[in-house]
Image 1 (tube, helix red, strand yellow):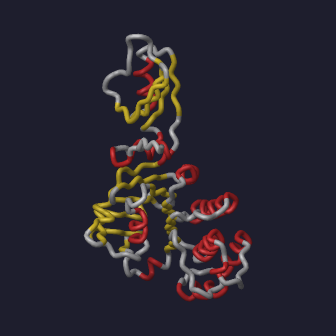
Image 2 (cartoon, helix red, strand yellow; image 1 turned 30 degrees about the vertical axis):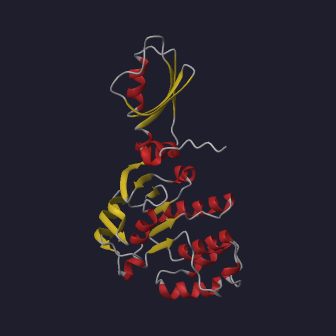
Image 3 (tube, rainbow, N blue to C red; image 1 turned 120 degrees about the vertical axis):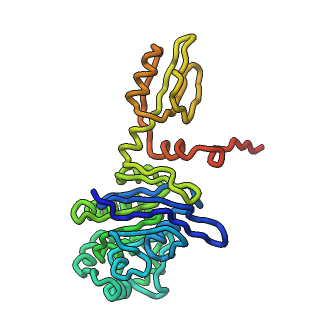
Length: 301
């Protein structure tokens, strides 16, 4: 699998503040890559740079070995759906279709007609009269009609009902499987990303904390519930990310290979031990960690 989207040492500054601060990012060809981060970490800025909307101050962005900014031919192969959808005030789907057909050489009428069966929107109704979720559907309908090679999505499913979310992901994953489309998606819905992504990047303060395949990420952190006998405790040398105790039961989040950690704890003859899988949300919380992201205990009287 070759790398299709490569970002190296990306810097973007607004009013003296670095939204992106030496960001590195690599998306393999044909991957569904989930970009996750707390609010304000720079992921939307990153996606706008990838889409060629922002020009970076420093660093390098290449998509399919080409720089993206002011590269009209490359941009014609990229579908970008932002969180805040924009349509012309009085435009209908038919009028937007005409615009897309003129702007994108790869726009296909047959795809537009087939996608219309999935979205069931009135093509003659002004899009401004659609609900937020319907406007998102309209954006997907138009974007996928250009048969893109790259799809960049920023909180794409916000406002969509569960059935439509599943419908859109079904279409996107079919595009990945059949045409080897590369998808980068930013979302706060980590449970949804866990179902669809094969690669994950975690950002914070404009930098990339880590990038891994989802399987590698899940294989390098483990949750264990354990009860030690009197006089015994956790072996030294283990990397503990979180520890809590209820009665005699300790719950531990540990970094490392689950098999190796289990073997070391088993050697202490625990009274009870259970190894549990971690969700992507839990991995995100414990990888992020640190005082800046600690959960604050606030009591309101």
